[in-house]
Length: 257
Image 1 (cartoon, one colour):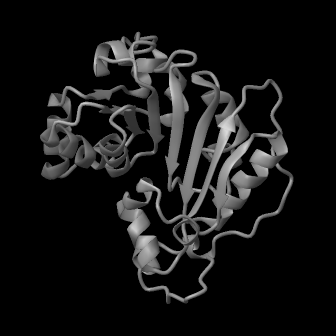
Image 2 (image 1 turned 90 degrees about the vertical axis):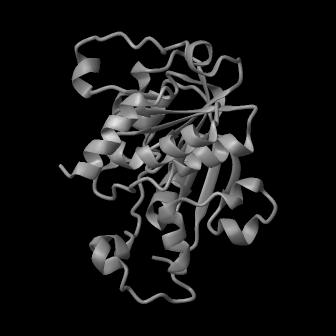
């Protein structure tokens, strides 16, 4: 492991708004002190708690926290070296309504009590085109989220992937979740929403290549039965390339993956 990564990991340990748990710790039954008490112990208020799952560098969590001081935001990811960017920025700026949790998303229910979370943001998650159960909008994750998200809490998906967007729209329709907003070209259809000013590192890459950003917002109504959509979806061709090759794919004005 490089010295830069080691330095970031060490600094992450010193940030008071960063919480790190290994899978081993959770499986061993180590109690999570913050569970059910994030507002009491971390944010010192009673504002709604919003999660960004797969937050990467954390810039979206930090941006949302600055835009909405009346809400508390927690960025969640397993990649500590990436998360360091947002954690460092928010610490330097003294942003009090954002925190970071380093853990596996599959174990997220261990950290939050029933009805503790009001909203979830999924920003450019891996579409997992070969593994349905790994998709962050798959029904197994809906079942997981409803353990701690309030009834009719909001789920936001922002993605460059036509595959992920199509799958999620079909999953939402199959399970009857109420849709608040849905668009396959966010920046062409919405012009005044302040969240449009927040762009992640990867989002800007997709935009620079001429790809459109898809967005769907729906309400997570609690249920006991879940239904996976039975549909064939065309895969995103560009995702078969490695990152070094993606950079050289020709951009077309009407590019749709």
